[in-house]
Image (cartoon, rainbow, N blue to C red; front, side, top):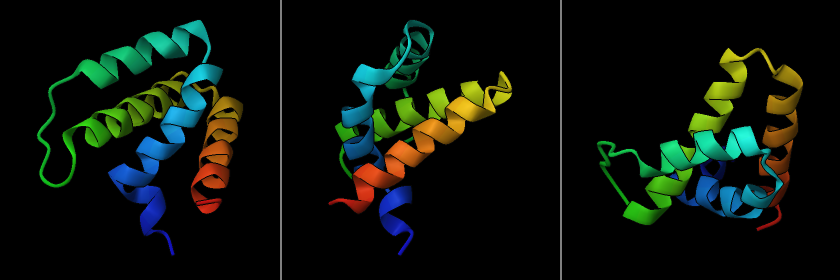
Length: 84
């Protein structure tokens, strides 16, 4: 089922595991994404902020054409979420 990978809860769990493996540049993007004020509709505000930070890092890497790093992070997300 794909829902755990798309939910803020699943992304939050993955991000908490991956945050220590981000480069300095990725960590700066992460902090900006985490601190942004979004339009949360459902769920826990803290989980939403972690998930938004992860999405910011993936988006940044994709737009920077760092596709191998995007793949590396997303594979890590999949392994963390599927293990739960």
